[in-house]
Amino acid sequence: MSSASTALVVAEVRTRYRTLLALGAGALVFELALAGTYTALGGAAGLAQSFGKNQPAFLSAFAGGRGINIFTPSNYVGFGFVHPLFLVLTLTVGISIGTASVAGDIETGRVDLLYTRPLHRTTLFDSRLGLWAGAQAMVVVAALVGSWIGTTLTHDLRGVSPLLFVRIGVAYLPLAAFFGAVAFAASASSHTRGHALAVTVGVASLAYLVNFLALLWHPLAWAARVTPFGYYTPLQPSGRIDVTNVVVLLVATVLLIWLARWWLERRDLV
Image 1 (cartoon, rainbow, N blue to C red):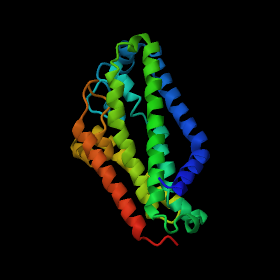
Image 2 (tube, rainbow, N blue to C red; image 1 turned 90 degrees about the vertical axis):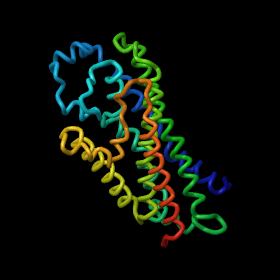
Image 3 (cartoon, rainbow, N blue to C red; image 1 turned 30 degrees about the vertical axis):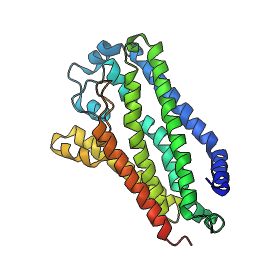
Image 4 (cartoon, one colour; image 1 turned 90 degrees about the horizontal axis):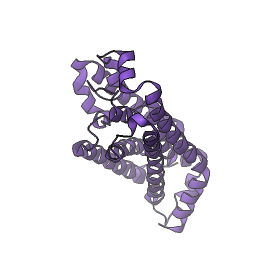
């Protein structure tokens, strides 16, 4: 890493560290609090009594699965990692850093100072990718730690296997990486952060809605496999990692990053 790109990363960290710490703390507290609600709601028996023996289909769809009992301890913990608030807290990392990576430089006029020879255009881009990867992992790990602490403090959840958190982390990071790559690709092809943000949020919102409808309405079940959320299934046996889903998301991420770098090398930055 060159001195210029190192200085840029340091400046980015100084600018964003409060936001990143807040997102990490928010994710940790949310997962910790969610685990604490399990006993307060009466555990599996209390939740089943409240919602009935036949779990409403919208609850399964909301939890990212079909026909899965989310009231069992491991599934309740997994539900915390598909909850919209968790998704917002964690995906904001990639969206905020990614959308500002190129479009932010153009919008603020810094492009003439940063993208100059002999420094290659993609050097700065790659430095921000590294910053985003580290920040994204930090926030997701904070959420996993919060959930683990919550399970150890909650009597009804103490039997949850630690492997569950490993599997969720391995399954979720590729999904977060995909949407981060969408943000970088949108920024590399935009002139304003607003446009890049609109594209990224639009893709994420549409993908979430399509996946939800696919899980809720059986004739539309096939549509789940055309959205990135269809390749993220936290409500599964704790020791199982779906390697195919992980590979699909990682391949899509690599292709998007390659496309963003390719476009950045050829576009007019003025």
